[in-house]
Structure formats: C-alpha cells, structure tokens
Amino acid sequence: MRRPGLIDYLAYSVSQTARVGWFYSQYRAAQSLAPRLPARRWPKPGTGAPGLGRSLMADLRALMRRDWENIRAGLYKPPHDLVPSPRAALRQALRFFADLPAVNLRRRERLHSEVHADAPAGRYPRYYLQNFHYQTDGYLSERSAALYDYQVEVLFLGGADAMRRQALPALRAGLADRPDARLLDVACGTGRFLSFVKDNFPGLRVTGLDLSPAYLDQAARTLRRWDGIELVHANAEAMPLADASVDAVTCVYLFHELPRAVRAQVTAEIARVLKPGGTFVLVDSLQRGDRPLYDPLLERFPVSFHEPYYADYIGLDLRALLADSGLTVDVIELAFLSKVVVATRAV
Image 1 (cartoon, helix red, strand yellow):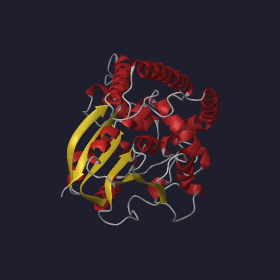
Image 2 (cartoon, rainbow, N blue to C red; image 1 turned 180 degrees about the vertical axis):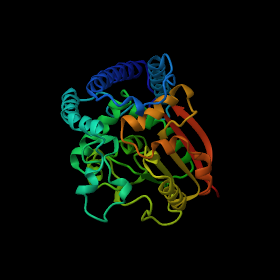
Image 3 (cartoon, one colour; image 1 turned 90 degrees about the horizontal axis):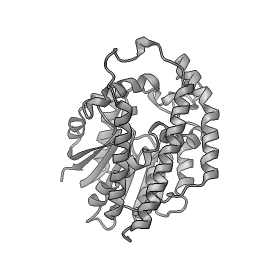
C-alpha cells in the first residue's frame, strides 16, 4: 500500500471538512423541523452539560484526525469515495427531506408498529418488526435501504463512516497471520462497512449476514465492484455457519438494537462460529459513563428516536456479556459517539 503524502492529506482534509459541513447543516435543518417532545420525556432538568455542542464538534474533529493518522500510518486506505458525486449527494438529500415529514409524524404520534402490521406472519422475530428510528418501513423495504446510510450520516454529522473505519486496524492485526482468512460481518446491512473492508483486503473471503432482503440487495449493489463476497439472508440468533468456521467476526451498530436475551444469543453464535484465537470486533454506541458529559445525550436518544433496547444497552457490561460466551476483551477504544471493542475467542 502506497503511503499517502501531502496531496493526499489536502484531499482528505478538504473532502472531510466539506462532508461534515454538508451533514451538519442538514442535521440542523432536520432538527428545526422535528416535533418538540413533551417535557416529561426528557432527562431531569439540570442534567444537560454546558458546552456540549462544542465538545461534540471537538470530538468529531479528533475522530477525523485519528482517521487520517491511521491512513497515514498505512493501516487502511483513504475512503474509496473520497470525492463523492455532487449529483448523487443532492439526490440523496432530496430523498432524505422528502421522507422526513413521515418520520416526524411517527415521532410526534409515537407510531412504530406499522412494520409489524404489514410484515408476513412468522417470518421475522417480533422485536425486529418495528420502525427503529421511526424510519419508514423499518428495515424491510428498498426505500428504507436506499435512505439508511444517509440518515445515519446526518445523525452523526458526517462521522459515521470514520467511526466504522476504526474497526479496520484491529481487523488487520487479527488477520495478520491468517493468509487464507474468512471474515463474517454480522448484520451487514447495506454493505457500507464491508466496502471499506474489501477495499483494504481485496483477497479476503467475506460473508455478510443480515435479516433484511432489501438491505442485502442494496449491499449487493454497494459491493458489486469486489469479488469474494457471499451475502446470506439469516437471523444472527441462528447463523447457518459451521462451528469455528471463520477467522474474524465484525458487528457494527447491532447490539444496541437487540433485546437483552437476544443480544446474549447473538454473542453466543458469534463465539460459536469464530475459530479459537479468532478476533471479534464490535463497533457500537458509547455507553453510560464512557464520556460522562454525553450521558444525558445517551439517555435522550431513545426518546428522540425509537430505540426500544438502547436504554438497556447503555448500562450493559460488555466485558461480562462477551466473557459469558468465551470471548476475552483485549481493547476498548472510544471514537466520537461510538466505541470499538476488540475481543479474542479462547484457544
């Protein structure tokens, strides 16, 4: 891999500055249109912290510096879409704002069960059939899949991809002595994270598993330029993979959307399919106490967005959860509003 130089740094800086400005402006616009929530639903008065907005922006800048330093150190490449298409960005923005009134109606009226009413009986677990984030169609339509990545970037002010990429250094280290390695990405969604994986590890055999056919179709489009990818429609609670069949497992932004018992089952499945000595990399939300300044923000999140299992997640002992399935936590690192947890299956 060629080490980046000054021109690469300038390109990265200009691109990411424009990216943050673009998504931050849309976040502010979306917030101005959002319905006000009843006061009784907010955290107690006095729990907010002065300077929260400044801290968020400072931490976002720190994330981008970390992202660049990883690129400069050769841990992974610059983003493959460093120079985006303005036409595509405008089209996505128009689609996002066109859908926003429906999202805000659900937020105002607390509507989050239309997916359950419309989905085929018995095909999906009940907890899955909700309008997570009050998004249209939940996870079960092409429209939702086309909107999802953009919605997440607006929510994280343009930092979502950079947070996802913080899993790549641990993945590189975990695969260093495994020349014929196989990776499983649990809840691969639209394939956005896997696009960074394949761009950096083109010869790696990859399996992406997800419960949404629509999101898997989108993943196939996202990943069409790379080979060696298998996409599997399955529930992470019962993965159709053999015991000890993969060298590494990644899981990005799934755990906070699972009920406690299901979270434990998915963790056990991850440990089952992982080879002894294999690496598990989890990227998910911060938890209570990780950054005390942000605790009120974490408590407010499931109120502002329909995230029914988030309050349980932010109080979860991740080390204990993984240990119960034979996974030992090696590293926990914070990255803006996310955390990266690296664990190893016992030999």
